[in-house]
Picture 1 (cartoon, rainbow, N blue to C red):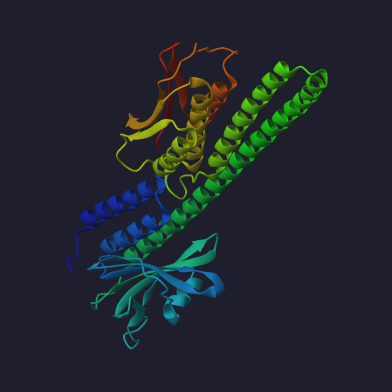
Picture 2 (tube, rainbow, N blue to C red):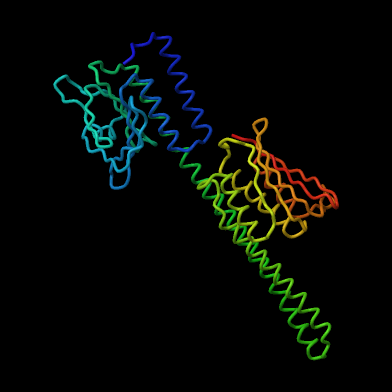
Length: 381
């Protein structure tokens, strides 16, 4: 155990620790990673031998989620806290020290098959709008008790843990709402597309009937061929929409992994040479809504490639620059004349609106015979 730092050094250490925690939360990192980080930081700031975090789960059971000690950081599984003193912290209004008197036994609990017994501890409840959701506690294997200043610091760390849990819950809700909204949108598109196709086929069947009665075999065969091509295109659209619905978004795989999965299946379905070039090289800090919109923009751009580009190859690349993420979709197809007015292709207009809805932008570069490049820029968190 290191010697106690001077007051100035201690203040600087606490400020640096709290700033680090705040940045992790602001970056919307994985909630478990943030909580584990705070648990480890708390051990250092509190000059303790061990720090533990338990969260209240179903049936009023207190589950040990994270523990940090001199050997490292742990994420125990199926460890339930039954120690009365620790459970009593759920009902405490603020952080407190244990033991209240020298005659009381050491605080004890189990972690990964090891029994911990600490003669000095400090415990703080995690309160969400006055409702207890967990307990954080620190322990020392020496006889030095925790001070009032350290108790206040533990209370601040407990508040940071609650904020991290709230952010994690909010991110999960945003992701869920974004996915539900996009799935509803795709379902509407499938319904409208099918209704249009079935309506057209109904009219075509009437035409075929008339041509058959007239004995106009040449016109009949031509109509049948046209109908067959329409059914083939409709089938491709439906398969593409089903793939979009099936695509796992960032909440499960992460943006890059979800995009790679989609491209692999897109290549199989279309026969196009589709590849992903990831130049970002690190974890991307995007909101759930931004991830969802980006995936949909790429999906719509690839749908345009499949339907109109007559391409043999398409490359999706990801890069970061100046705190922004750039996603480009480049094909070697026939190209087009790019319009930037009210006559802009509806699909491009939708992609542009999606990009702008998340604070980004979209540009299209193309010319007849020279392929098309779509570039999406969105700010990173």
